[in-house]
Length: 554
Image 1 (cartoon, rainbow, N blue to C red):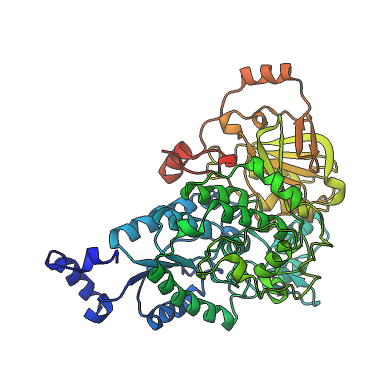
Image 2 (image 1 turned 90 degrees about the vertical axis):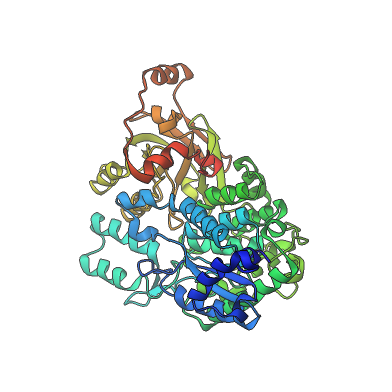
C-alpha cells in the first residue's frame, strides 16, 4: 500500500504519532487509507449537501474495510460570481483544485480516493487531479437541483431567472414577476437543474467511466443519492484491491465515448474547455477539429434546459446517462470494451440499461437533429476555432449575417443591451474577456440572458473570446481563438463590420478584406492588463488559449 510510506517501520514512528493524534487506532492504520476529497461549503447551493454525501461515502469505505480520511477542495458558485469581478475567479479555480488536491494526496500518501464534487470547475479540476495522480479513484457528485415551480404552476430554473431580468428591462415583466422567479427558480440544494456545465460534467464523468451509474442525474435531495455515495465508498475498496487506476479508465477511447455522449445530451460548451484539459493530464490530446467529426455522426437525443423545458430529474427518470448511451449503441457509436470504475467494461454496465421515456431521450431513429449539440466554427474571425451550443440556437439564427456591435468588456455590452441600443440583426462582439485578456475567461450568461429576455434571442447573435454558462441559449458563440489579447482577429473588428455566421457549415467570417485587416493589425496596440496583481496576474502569464482547453503551461 502507498500508505505504508507514512505508517510502517521504526523510521515512521513520528508519522504514526501524528496519525494517532487524529484519533486513529492501530486497527484503522492497518487498513487502506482512503482520501475523501469533499467539496462541501456553505456558499455554493450545489455543495451545501456534500457533508451528508461525504458521511455516506465514509460509511461505505468503512463497511468495505478501509479507513476514510476527509480533506477539502474549494468550489465557486458561478451564478453568485456572475456579473462582477468574481467571475474572473471561476475558471481559474479548476487548476487550483487540481494542484491543491495533488499536493494533499502526495503529501499524505493515500491508497485511494473518492472525489466528491458537484459544480462547474470543481468536477473537471478533480478529474484533472485524478488523471495526474493515477491512484485508484472513484467519483460521487452531489447531484442536480430539482426544477423550480412558479406560482402559476410553470416549471422553471436558473436560466429562466437570468432571462427574467432581461424581460424586466424590456418592460414585459414587473417586479412581482421577477420576485416569483427569484423565490422559486432554485428550490433545493444541488447543481442547477438544467443541462448546464455542472450537470454536463457530472454526466460525462459517468460516461467516461469514473463514476457509478446515476452519478450525473440522481437529484441531490433524493435518498438514492446517499445510497450511491455508500456504494461509491465500497467500490473504491474494490478498485484498490484490483489496482484499477484512472489511467486504465481514462483512455483515448473513453474520452471519445464522453465526447459522443456530450453531443447526444446537448451539453454545455464549457465541456470543450474541460475535456481537453482533463485529457491533457492523462497524456491524451483532444483537438477541437475532431469535435465536428464526432458531432456529424452523433444524433442529438436530449433537449434539457436551456435548449428545452425538461430537467435533470426528468432525464434521471427516463434512464439517465446510461439510457442515452444505450440508444447510442444502436448506431455503434461507443467503444464498449473500455474499463470503468465498476470493475466491468462499459458494455457490461449497459446490458440492463434502457430508455424509459422516448419523449425525454429521443430514440436514435427520431432525434432532435442528426448531428450533435455542439459545433466548432472556423474562419478568419476564429482561425483556431470557436464553439456554439447549436442545439439551443433558434432555426432562424443558424445562418446569420449582421453588423458588428463592438464592446471591450461584458459591462459595456450589458449597458448597451439594457439601454435598448442593440437592434434585431446585430452581432454583439465582446472581446478582451479571454483566458489572458479577462483574465479568467468570464461567462457571459448575463448578456446572453439579457438578449433573450429583451426578446432578441431569435434575431441577435453574440460572439466573444470569453465563454458561456451552460445555461446560455441562442446564437451565442464563444471561445474565439486566438483571443483579442493575443492579437486574434476579434481584436481588429470595428463597429459596423459585417459578420457572417453559418453554423450548419461550421463557418464564421469577418467580411473585411485581408488588406484592411493587415492595416488594422499594424495599428493595433494591446490594451493594458486589467489585473496587475495576485493570482490572476500569474494565471494570465501561464494560461493557454481556449482551443487548447485553457490549460496552464510552464
